[in-house]
Length: 226
Length: 226
DNA sequence: AATAAAATATGATATTTGTCATACAACTTC
DNA sequence: GAAGTTGTATGACAAATATCATATTTTATT
Image (cartoon, rainbow over all chains, first blue to last red; front, side, top):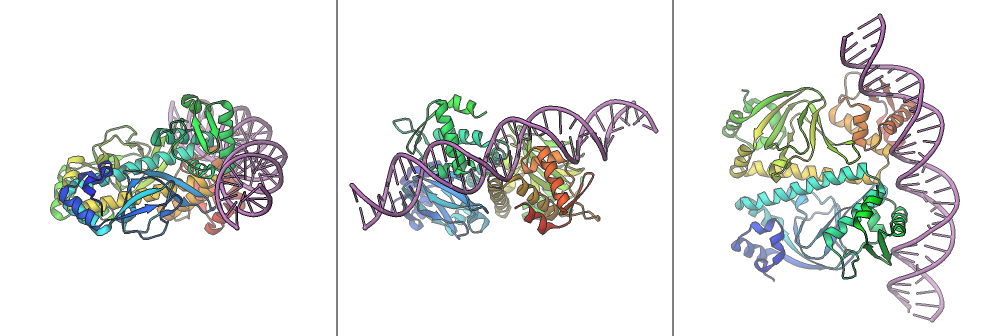
């Protein structure tokens, strides 16, 4: 069992408020998992009863819509927590989490976290602030979905992916999403997504090479979307 | 200054965890306001530094989109709190709140609430749970915006308004929204909203009479939207 | 009550987006 | 390496939605 105390990623989440003693206690009751690309961490409707701490890798949070499409609500990566919402509300999870690449995650049971909420006020405030941040983000995302065109949303999504997850040595986007997944982020049909990528490609603002997407002119890409 | 202890609406929010003593302290530092229909409680970007408790009336939470449209993110009514998100994050508010009818609200300053977070764990847990509920709602709303047609969204919005805010003696929706506001909830152009209302009216599933909207056949309305 | 202003309604039309069909490319699997 | 499977690409078309113009109704103002 690895020591939480020496885990760097805890510094990036609400867990940073915990002291040595508390971390030792967590290390004692946590379990570690390896999740292969494409595998779920949890699925909509499941009872999770704890939170996951992402040690490495990226996953998508999706919700199945009535029309059968998987809408990607958010991407979560190294250092972030998963499952707080449902743990605190004491409800099944409302979203599915599926690995986009091989992942390392730790699971901390609910009882442990709840105990910490009681004894460490800084920790609960951190958690509250993080959830408030998620809520703000969700509201902004909502307005984007409601008010912007598919073309704008696609362009902004591409820029978001680059700014958030970075690029490979060849400048292509690091996170690899299928066209279907990209469409699921943007909230459009896969064919429409492909068509618009083609269009951006022809305009010379992005470059397509197999699954690889490279933004060659960020400013122009955003401009072209308007 | 009225007594929070005797205010019924506090029973409907996180404030219900507070004891007599704590309520007396709040009553002592709160301020009460009357907000006329159409007036703002606060505006996007403002520093609020506290929370509002809605004693009576309904308001809309809106966000101005880049295209100049006001998207209505949520409606808030009697018994609910307002401004927690920005208070906890220690940021300006990200949404505007505007009264849809005459309102009675109380303002409780941030220092007071923060003090209560420290001394009353049940209160902070209530608040956290409420915000988690908002987050879940926002995610679901987001998926609806991304995946459903305008017609579906309008039908669901009408049903939501009826189920949440009730009907007048003549069966018309109690909350009164202009066509523009309704379009702002649905996330569409005002003309499209009007056109679809017309269509529902011709189908006989709703009835229009001036600004009044009456759902005459809820099941059929939802069915017609698919 | 008369007038102006705002909100609602509807037609005509352009644009956006989705759907279905099909082609082609890339990747597995045997 | 052939056959099948999956993912990507594109055309043709239909449906949904936005936009602009204008009429009509409602509400506010004098």
